[in-house]
Image 1 (cartoon, rainbow, N blue to C red):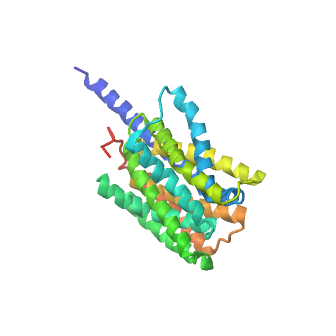
Image 2: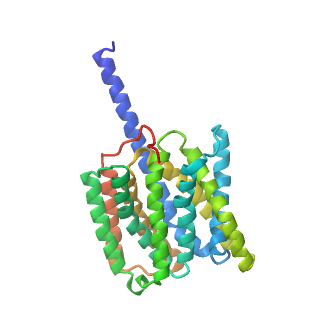
Image 3: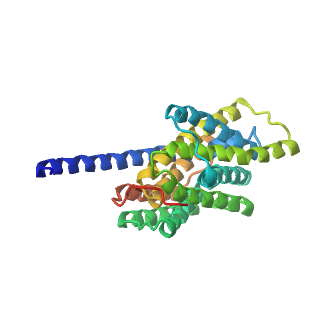
Length: 316
C-alpha cells in the first residue's frame, strides 16, 4: 500500500506530465497554424507552374516521402483500411483539390478568410454531435470573439469578398472536408500510432489523386514549372503538408477537435499578413481590428482547461 506522501508525489508527477502534454500539443498546433497561414500564398505561386490536380498529387508525394523515413525508424507501417482512406480524402485530397481550384477565382487572403472563418463552426458542431464534446466557457468565448473578428475582417475586404460563386463553394467544400478530418483525426490519432495513421492517410490520397492528375495532364500540357513554382511546391509538400499535418496529429491527441478548430483561427491574421507582404493584397483597418479579435479568441481557446486525451479511438 502506497504511503500518502508517495501517492501525492505520483499524483503531482502525473499532473505535471498531463500539463506538459497539453502544452506540447498547444505549441504543435500553433506551429501547424503558422505553416498553413502561408499555404494559400505558396499555392498561388505553385499554380503558376502546375495545374491544380497535379499540384495536389505532387504535394502529397513529397509529404509521403518526408514521412516515410520517420515511419521506418519507428518500426511501423502505414495504416490502411477505411480510416486511412477517410483521413486521406477529408484531410488531404478533397481540401487540396478544392482549394487549388478555388484559387483560380479567389485571392489568398479570401481563401484564408473563408477557411479560417468556417472551420471552427463546422468542426465545433461536428465535435459536439459525433464526439460528444462539450466546449468549455473559455472555448465558447473564444469562438464568439473569433466569429466577431471574422465578420470585421470580411467587412474590410471590400470588393475582394465578391469572389466567384464557384470559388466560394469550392473553398467551403474543402473546409467542410477538413472539419470532418479533425473529428476523425481526434479518434485516429488518439493512440501512439498517429504517425502510421497519418502516413496511411497521405498514401491513400496519393492513390486517389494519381489517376485524376493523369487525366488532367492528358487534357492539358505537361507542366513546365519555374524555379519559384518548384520551390513553392517543395515548401507545400514538406512544410505545409508533412510537417503541419504531423503537428496537427500531435495536437489532436491531447486537445478537443473544437478547441483545435478555434485556435486554427490564428491562420486568418497570419494569412492576411502573408498575402499582403508577398502578393500585395491590401489589408485595411477593419481587417486589423478583426485580426486582433481573432487572436483574442484563439488565446481564450489556449486558456481552456477542458482538454483531455482519448484513452482509445472509438470506432469510426
